Length: 318
Ligand SMILES: Cc1cc2nc3c(=O)[nH]c(=O)nc-3n(C[C@H](O)[C@H](O)[C@H](O)COP(=O)(O)O)c2cc1C
Image 1: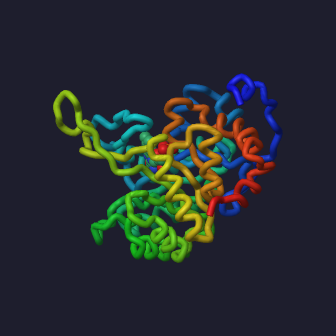
Image 2: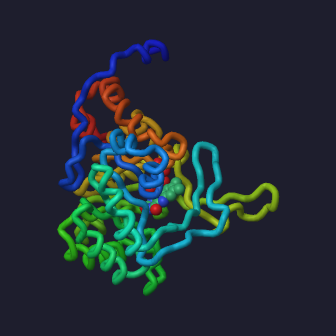
Image 3: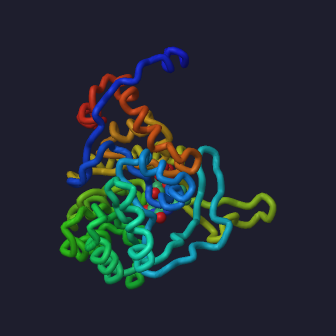
């Protein structure tokens, strides 16, 4: 079909409403944690942002126990079809987030998932208990790409650590717990299976892939922290392979992300086994990227012969 014929195709009307872990959603499009600052966007775009919010569910940036300044500069490097970041989780800490940010985020009016990270099970427990106690919060995402101070091991790279953490956190709340998987392992499905065994309601994936860049001027590492994480379209084929492997290994739903830039690439993740999807790096280029995915999904589904999201999910490639 020519580009002009595509442009002339009428937009089909389709009900995209869905859900994740019992949280009802008006559609399947979330944001990747840390890639869309809704409070900053509201300051810039005003209430128009709330009236026409680009996502069906908002995932906060990762919150830690104490305020953090983040990593030293530089923090970003553009690569062909992607970028490396070493932002380093700057943030207000748990108290600052609960006091100043959570109420304003709840005004957006879509379900809210709060991402948390800690370097011990004890601090994770405090984060989960205090965040889950707030009515504004629909679910919690656990960012497990951090070393455990007790073992020195990155929790999300170790099935046993992931299962033990989930077993410690599961009794603390009835709200959905979503484990954000790291792609920096040989077999992400082993970690996903462990998360499920420990009581996770869902896994989200992928987080960024370990990466580095060399400064052409100084011949030293560009990023202040030495290395960072790659994201954007460059990682999409890796993300699709991992979503496919994990979704066939677990019974819990998968939130798929990694280089989604439009409705077609979002649909690829549904076909690979994701229940819903998240848009990350593309938000930096186009703050309405999430809405563009939603708007394009009916046509993308129809072009592949699907009458609904459920039909596409049923056709998941084996
Ligand atoms: C600038 C930046 C900041 C991020 N911050 C977080 C974060 O705070 N917590 C987290 O779990 N993931 C974070 N991520 C990872 C994204 O949520 C997402 O998993 C990853 O970038 C892959 O999706 P994408 O290719 O669509 O960006 C960040 C990614 C970027 C690019």
